[in-house]
Every structure is written in structure tokens, then in C-alpha cells.
Image 1: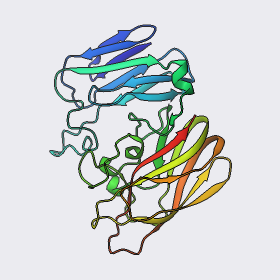
Image 2: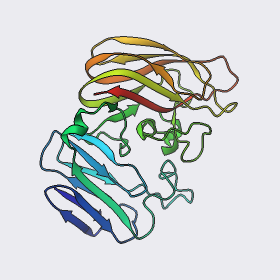
Image 3: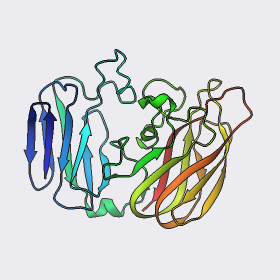
Length: 263
């Protein structure tokens, strides 16, 4: 297996090994730099840390090489590409990156099957992965990936750690969560953004599953998680849609996090 930092000049740093790889990259990232993770077995579960300021990502890889572009926007003084990440991530001269195989007991654990802190906008064979038919103004602060990054703060709408999925006032907004393999679930949680009175909320939504079934979800104005006991076996994806906004002056409902518990 391999971890590498790829720059405009080529491979700037790399670590090879059979398992439990750790790399410390001692240089400042530049525009266009990316991390490259190469594994020797797919499909399979791996645990990856893309930065010392971020949680590990427990992921299911379906391709043997995954590139992770460093969030960087030198043309914008506010660095809007990185605004949905911790201010301490990807900066400075020391970067801590790891890669290992998931242990058998981890694979069997009951957990949040939706969480992937290293999810990207495009499908790169790294699951779970989430995508949507709209993201407010195309900004990273309102990207679909924010709903599975494990950050639950929902009392504001800007900046980190208050990133969310924004729907740009689209009435047909939909968000799709792909697991990359069959999973069994018994609970769905939605954490909606609660920056009242700036925010509105959804009174009703419909979740559709890969097996063709669906459930109507009823919600209320709340900062607490909306918890739904829903059992499904062998599903590979779910879609959240038919979002019905409450009768409220604010036109801005948003989703902070989606969690799916099971095995």
C-alpha cells in the first residue's frame, strides 16, 4: 500500500508498506497538491486520515487508487473552498496522514453507516458517498458532503463548524446517500440546521430506498436530531426528497447531518 503527496513537480513524498502506514509531510501545501492513497485489495474496508486536524474516515474502497485534492483556493482571499473544514486543517509545515486496513471487529460493529469525513464532490470509489441535485451557489459551505462529515453543530449557518447542505430554495431538492455495498439499518437520524430566525425547517420529507420502498418523515422546528426507527436490509442507497418547508418567513431550510445506524 502507499500514501503519496502529488504536486505539480511529481511525487513530493511517499510511504510504502503492507499495513498501518503513517506519513508526515514536512512542507506547505500548494495549489493543485493532492494526496494519493493506493491499496492492494478492493473492494475492502480501510481507515484513512487525510489530516491531523480531522477524524479518521472508515471507508469502503471499490478502486485501488483514491486521490484527495487538498482544499485550496488561492484566488479567493476568504478561501471558500476550505471554509467547510476546520481552520487548523491542511495548513502549516507538518501534515499527519495515515492509512490502514480496517480490522474485522470494526467491520462488524454497529455504527453510523453514513459517516465519511473524507467524502468528495465526485464519486471516486470511496464510500459512503453523498450527492445532490443542488448545492446553494455551488459553495463548499453548503455542499452535500457536509451532511456526512460527522460535524453536528447546527446553531448557525456560517462558517465551520456550521457547514450544511443548502438547497438554493429549490422545491425539487434531493440528496442521495450511497453505501457502495448492501447494508442493514434500523435507525435514520436527520439533524436540520437550526439558526432561527435565519432558518426555516422542513415539516415533511420522503426517504426512498434502493429496494423500492419509501417512508414519509414528519419533523418539527427543533435543534435536536429527528430520530426515525426504520429497518431495511440489504439496501445500497437511500434518497431524501419531497422536502416540504414549514410555513415560515425564512426561505432557508438546510440539513446539517444525516446518520444511518446499523451494520
